[in-house]
Amino acid sequence: NGKVEFRDVHFAYDAARPILKGISFTVPAGKTVAIVGPSGAGKSTISRLLYRFYDIQQGAILIDGQDVRDVTQKSLRAVIGMVPQDTVLFNDTIAYNIRYGRVDASEAEVEEAAELAQIAHFIEALPDGYETMVGERGLKLSGGEKQRVAIARTILKAPPILILDEATSALDTHTEQEIQTSLDLVSRGRTTIVIAHRLSTIIRADEIIVLRDGLIAERGSHTHLLKEK
Ligand code: ADP
Ligand code: ADP
Image 1 (cartoon, rainbow, N blue to C red):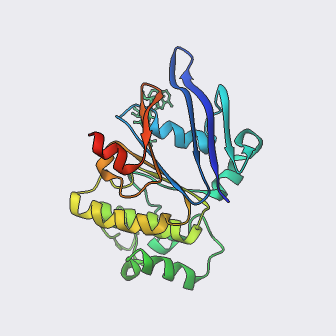
Image 2 (image 1 turned 180 degrees about the vertical axis):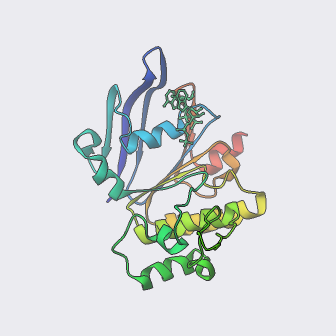
């Protein structure tokens, strides 16, 4: 399970300026839909609506047929995982940061997730900016390493629904490719919404939706849309 449906979704932060003007799409359980569009198109808004940070004005958002308005934010957080553009780490060990979201996980499970995300060698380290009174200092992590912490967290949480919100856009090209490969592995078999501003950063998606001016301007398969460009 983990099917996500947006049905004629209308949304505005402020009534004078609609952001989504009737968006419909379905992400079948276990499939991947990519949402592509210029900055300000409303892509991140879609993920916030799924989490129910805001309620929509018209239409419906359903998870496995259930309207999210009938579900608490807490339950939504339990089924949705998110890898954001920039991962902000808590001032505690990397292991703690990985465990966040599934506090009941065993140490072995945390280690396994860290290994899969290729950060097993620094899970006991503290993040950058951390400094204790006795002068211990945190480790300066690169953008890619921080994204790997978010990936390990997601592997451990194993949510049925995953949102990748520009998860690689802050990285250099080489790191971006490496992280994309890891994300591709994590998202396999999971309902995934990939948000990106460039079509070229989407490696794999069952459907690509191009958002423009609050509407779906184009939709189709990877090959279909790439051919048109
Ligand atoms: P994208 O992810 O495609 O770049 P967003 O969904 O973040 O776009 O934003 C869509 C539009 O909504 C932008 O014009 C943005 O300024 C506006 N917006 C986003 N968040 C808020 C908010 N909390 N209040 C008012 N306007 C907002
Ligand atoms: P993110 O989801 O990437 O953490 P935010 O939710 O803070 O980012 O904002 C996303 C976009 O929406 C940004 O372009 C920001 O400028 C815009 N935005 C956020 N809050 C508001 C707001 N209250 N009014 C107008 N624009 C906003």
